[in-house]
Image (cartoon, rainbow, N blue to C red):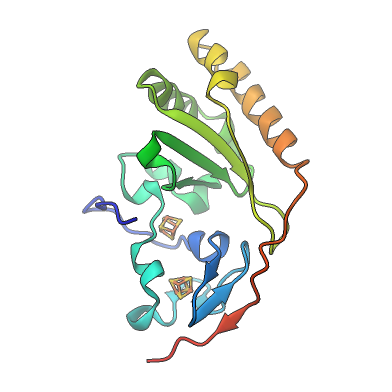
Length: 182
Ligand code: SF4
Ligand code: SF4
């Protein structure tokens, strides 16, 4: 899936998708959660000009929809995943717990989505090489939103994450293979 990107937004120092997104391609296979070996800390992709097509077209929704800079995944710990958006579901993939989870910003944006009829899912990564856990939590979050209660909202988010982290993790079966050549 390729979504139109916001013109003035760049990934900057964020490389979260080069870690969290699994790849199983002829030229590049890396398990879920393993930072791609072509990713150089502070510099980004070392094979940028010849990177696989998937890397050219996969972007988190922070690159697509108007969300503040606080949402940048390496700052917020939340990768807003694009898969599911066509079915009206937005997935907040919480790769690291941060103060952002208790922010007014998160509460206000999720409240807006729910008010528009968008479904919201939470997801957490498992150990490297396993599929993440994910659950739609719209109905669970809605009472806190309707009560205008950000503290209860945060409590519900954290309880959901605790529950997801008890998931029975399933291996993704991907063996690392790095063979991108120009
Ligand atoms: S090839 Fe480059 S863009 Fe693709 S996952 Fe690796 S570092 Fe990221
Ligand atoms: S997670 Fe989003 S902001 Fe971060 S590198 Fe990937 S596309 Fe860019």
